[in-house]
Length: 388
Image (cartoon, rainbow, N blue to C red; front, side, top):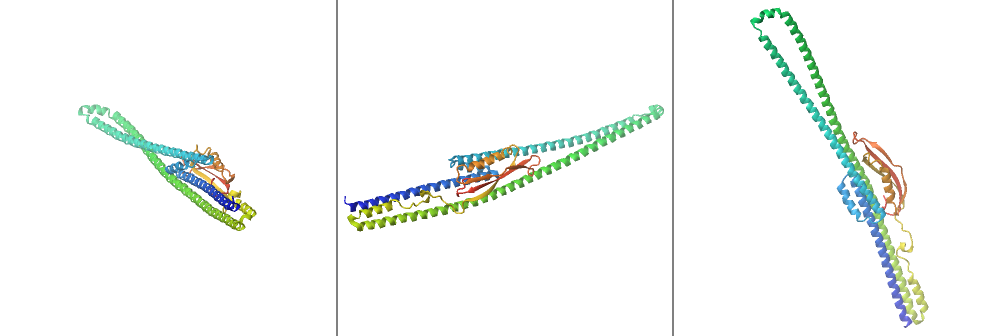
């Protein structure tokens, strides 16, 4: 074959090889971007599920976790999904316990009201019986007085002094019984009044507890919304940074492809003017086209950089309305979860602060609740928020 005819075929093969390499770089870059988007979607679903769990919107939490299961493909995401599901189950169990406690308190209040009603009815019945007994005794006295006839006048005269003494003794006994009855009746009324006052205070205290519980739930919801707004703002900043990085990479690829095409055209032109005697020129052109500048910085082994990164962040993790069962190992579970979320991530966990829990009686003084929190510091190297 004529050497002048072999040279154009060589340049055509080199051009096809350069295009194939550019397509491969584009495919790898697109795959990385899709993986980052999947991570962002998964983290957003987990965060939204946690936010819904804290506000006890369990339907919202279950919906987000069902969607997140489809993206849990590696140990880190599976661990984060498992912890979010455990937190959901824990909150559901805690709500069921609180509802059972509230129902038990309501039942005790109803029983106390029933006992008070029974005491009032018994007191009223005793008063009616005492009135009937007094009426019977008065009627009997009148009957005894009317039964005396003229035949008994002599006997009555002889026994008058004795009868008067007996009547006086009976009147004294009657007065004593009446005084005792009045005393018992006054004590019963006083007890009923004290019970009514105590039940009124108990009702007022329960009403205040319910109102305080509602206020605490509203405060917790507001804190969760504030954390959600901060997380959304950080996620939006990360998406903006990723979008800007993608645009920069696309511009670099276009510049690299344009530079490679210019080298090929220049070499082809010099070869055509050399004729059959330009074998050395053809070899030089082949060497320049076989090693073009890479379009993707990562293909050449370079490390990607992101605007504003790396940076060090300190976040707080907190939870409230915990009972005695859930507060026992809360610190161990939550700090372990934070550490697991950084496993396999490009972001770096620097430190986890001390975890503390304290009693919070603002919601249910009769049934103490607890609040726990800790801080953790981490270095964000990439904008995909693979660990929060």
